[in-house]
Every structure is written in C-alpha cells, then in structure tokens.
Length: 253
Figure 1 (tube, one colour):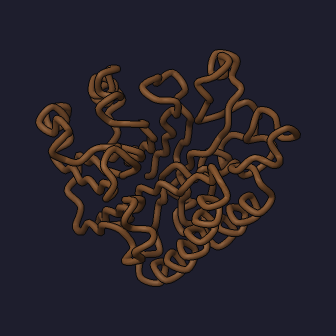
Figure 2: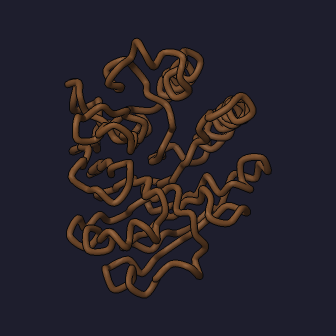
Figure 3: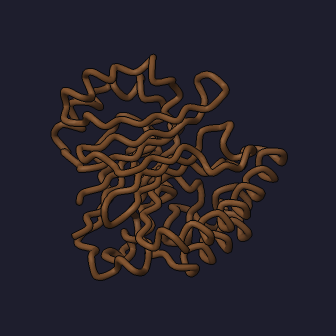
C-alpha cells in the first residue's frame, strides 16, 4: 500500500496548479490531504474519481475557507470516522480516519501556534490528541497517522535551529510533545530510512526559501511500531509544487 500525505494549502488552488494530473501520475493507493479549505460541493469530485479515486471523504472546518482534511482512496474503506468526538478539535476539521482490513489511516492537521491564543489551543489539542490516540490504539493497533504536525522534531528537521528556537513549530515544549508521542508507539517512517539532513516538507513563500531549501520538516507519516516489519520505503517528494508544503510518502507491505 502506497500512502501519501499532502498539505495542499487549498485544494482548489492546488488543482489549478495541476494537482489532479500529479495525483494520477503519482498513483498512491491512499492520499491524506490537509488544509483543503473547501467543502465537498466546492471540489471537482468527478475529476478526482476519473483520476482513479472513487472513494473520497472530506471533513471541512465549520469556518469557510479554513483548515479541513480529506482522504482519497482507490480502496474502499471498511469504516470512516469523521473527527474525534472532542468538540474543540472537531469544529476545525482536523482529523479523519479510514479503516482498512489490516490497518487504519488517519489524516491529521495539527494547529499552528501563530499567536499566544492559538499556541494555547495547540497545546490543548496536542494533549487531548495524545489521550485520544492512546485509547484508539487499544482497538486499532495498526495505525498510520499522516499529516501536517506543525512541529519539527529535531534540529536536523529545520534549516536554522538556532534562530528558530523561540518560534512556534520548533519550541522545546512542542518538540518534547512530538518526541513523547513518537515514543508512545510510533515510527517516524522517513527517519526510519533516511538519517541525512536538508530534507524538508514546508518552505516559506518569502525570500526564495524553497529555491534555497531553507525549510522545515513538519509533515510526517507516523506508523505504529507493530507495523515496523511492513515498512518498505518512505520519501519526501519536493518536486511537487502545488503548495508551500510538499507530499511525503510511505509504502507498507
């Protein structure tokens, strides 16, 4: 199973930049999208079906043009779960899960901490999400959580760790949470295969950051420890330029 996670920063904008053609060529079995910024009625679902994805699930935010996640699949899931049941998480459309025969795939869009109020919300989300996943793993041990975590895990995951140490996304408390979350039973699939620096999944639109590869690795496919023997490959796909993020891929046997 080939799974991709991609923060498209507006699915309609991404489609105008060739996203559907790219999707057809990339041909994942499942793709998890974040920050779709649209309702299902605003998305050309027939064109996505024609690209090979008849099973489409969209979970937009209550606020129009904001946040939202989706899962597109070639394979029909056995079950789809919208949200977590936790209101402060769900009204922004940040969690969507599809259950297949031998694994479950979640699309996650963790909040950013752009100001003090949002940072407090982010920490509340993180704490409640950890509790939610702890409970979920009791019944769904084979879990793949794909998404934009809005956190760089380690210094190797950011182009300038010194200057960014007080910036949300690389704060010590955020990094400690992500480290503990991984240690609670998940493998960072990309780092499982690749220990090299200078691999990022998001770049600012300012100052030629992408062209100079001054980026952050904040998009992950975290795979349950129980599936380690099934990991085949994990790569970042920086040549896809439909967004300020790029896709991240994992292959599971």
